[in-house]
Structures are given as structure tokens and as C-alpha cells.
Image (tube, rainbow, N blue to C red):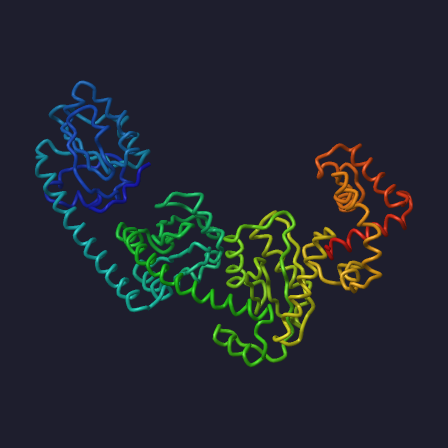
Length: 535
């Protein structure tokens, strides 16, 4: 049913107006709160096509003089159209309103008035419209007063928090502001509602409802909310939401929410601009710090204080670098993840940034919380942002001074490189988790090491170059899938028998036995050494 809650007077007010003392409400007394914003005189049968929400429809009964029962047919249609009430003058063209029409009106809470034969329609229109205009003028004055007060607050830099507090007091209902990054701003009354802090509850309104009146469940209460879009020109809709918690929304309340959305949008644009500048400065500081470009502890402390942080000279920290297994997310999504990790950190003191194009997390060490617990929380937060997109968090060693964080970052990069080559896909991995492969990485580039690698790799590369074959690539993928011929063939997009033939030919060229575990292990190590130190 269309919304009748428009500016004007209610059906109940009509009975108190001059000229309506003799009018009788025959049906729909439950709908007497409906507001009226105009009057429409119905003297033609097809009036349904012309009515508008909030109208008080009156008729002399002339269209129904031959068929009074037709009144029953139009009652549901009028209610569906949002008409506020129907007034019918009896005795002249129809003797009485049919009982079936009154029965339907009662079922729909649709007010039906019986107007006395002496009613003059021009007087009805004049009396009601005078009252409507007075009411609308009063509401416009209130709306203007509210808008002026709130605009003055933002003009003098009071900020979103104080703005929400003032709006809360004006409307005597909780208000929620959801920005484009899913950050919540709650009015004082909303702060006291535990469920109102659930971001998912409000972000669903972007997809599940249109702007205007909607319904949500908070605890054991099903309440009406009024949703307005904040005009800040961002990628995601920013919502300003009024909860019908203490009292019913008035028309002016809803108009207030709609109008101040422009003010909120302007303030959010300013706040976002300030935040972007601050974030860029913080990002530059974190990038310089983690990569080791800030040399002395004194310079590090100065930059940290300028970025709103404080550092202890002795503080355990370590770096986590996210390695994407399935595919790297777009830059916009990575930037959103950085902001979310900072604002909704899984642990106190955590920082995040993009460094060399990768998502890097600086994690404080804690004697109270085991590292495994902290990493579990970070992995869970990343899963909530990236869903099924696989990743491993490569964890560098813990350092005990902030000016040595670069050592942990170097470790994380090495672990990232090795784990990618060796196809690790655990949620997080450190050096202990690499097993024998950490030893391979630390082998010096001696003549003996290179000779061991080259005796297996060089013959294959030379053969491939001479015969335009893919023996080296085939054996590399073969080991990647743990010698599974079917999976190797699928990745190389070639026939199973072709892969089997290539593996046999590799063994012939190198003079090794495919059934000898030592021979295969040495070839495997040579391939991994070649991937770690491409020449």
C-alpha cells in the first residue's frame, strides 16, 4: 500500500473542523491517523486513474446513483492508491452506503465518512486546504530551523559526531550513519543499542531495500527505519538511517533526514579529503620504516609522533607479507583492506600498508597473546574481506627494536619467494614451516652448488633450445604436482601420454633412473635451486 504519511492534517482532525460536526465516520476508524494533503471531488466513475496519495476524496454519490454496490469495488483500489479517506454525501443520489463497502473499509482501516446532505463541497475544500497550508507552513518553519542549526554546526567545524548528537536530540530517535567504507557513526541513543554496532545489519540495506521506509529486526523488536542516501559522490552508497525506536517518525523527521544528507555528504567529502592526506603520510612513514629507509631510532621516533604514533626503544615486532595463491586482488580492494585493518584491527597496535605493490602487515609481539592466536585473527579478518581468494601470510622473524623491523620484512620476502616456488598454501608460514627449503635458500652461490644444479638443468635447457621442446618446463610442473601425470598434462594442456614420454626422455638425457628415489630427489633439488636462483 502506498505511504500516506504526507504533510497535512489527519482524518481525525476533520471531525473537529467547522462544517463537519454532522459528519459521521461509518468505517475505518483505525485509519483516522492518516494524513490529508489535498481534497479531490469525485463525480466520474473512472476517478481511480486520477487520485493521488494523501487525498481526501469526496463525492455527492452521483457516479453510483444507479449502482451503489460499485462503491465496494473501489474501496480496495483507493486504499491501494494511498487515498487518505472517502467522504460520501447521502440522501440525494444514493440513500445509504452499502454495508459491503463499509465491511471492506473496516478490514483495510480505510476511513469512510457520511457527509450530510447540506454539505457544500467548496466549503470542504476551503476549510481543509486552509488547515493543510497552515500545517505545512509550520512544518516548513521547523524544517528550516533544524536545517539552519545543523548547517551552522558543520560550518563551524563541530564534526560528524556532534552533528549526530544534535540530530539525535531533535528527532528523539537513534540515528546511524554508514559511510562508503562501512564505518559506522552512531548517535548517542544508537550507541546504547548493542545490535546497532553490527555493520553487516546496515550494509545489507544497500542491497536489500530501496531508500525510504524499510523494516529491520534489532534484538527481539521489529522496527521501522527511514533510509536516506547521503550525497557524497562515493563509489558505495552512504546511508543515513533513522530508527523508529522511541516514537513514530513524523513527516518533518523524514524530510530532515533527507535534507541534512546534503550537509553530511559535504562534511564527509571534507573528512575524506583530510583522511586521504593523513593516510598518505602514514603510508609513506610505514613504507620507509618497514623497508629500512629510516636509519636512526631518533628519526624513527620523530616520524612516528608526526604520524600520531609512539614507539618504545625496545618493542617486539614482526612483519607479515600476504602472498596471493589464486590471484592478486585489484589495487582498490587492497587499499580498502589496509583501511579496514587499521580501523578494525584484529590486535592492538597493528599497522598495514602497501609496499612494493604487496599487502604488508606490521604486527606487535605480545607476551599475553600467543603469536598463533594473533595470526589466526589476522587470517580470519583477511578471509572476511577477500572471501575464497586463497592467500598465505608469510611471517618474518620477531625483532626486539623498531629500527630492526626491516630485517623481519626481508625474512617475509624470502619466505614469500620460497613458499611460492614450493607451492605452500597454509594460512600463514614462517621459516620453521619451510623445512629443508630454508636451507636451500641460504646455500651460498659457490662453484660446487652451481655445478650440482647445472649438471641437471643445463642439458635440459640446451635440448629444449635445440629441439624447440618443453622438457624443463614439463619436469618443473611434474614436480609441482608431486609427479601426478594427469595434473601435469592438464596444466600444460597436452596429452597424458606426451607428458609420460617427456619424463622418460628427461631421465634418458640426464642418465637417471625414474624408479630411483635418490636420482629423482637430486633432480628435484636442482630444479628448486634453479627456481630460487634463476641464471
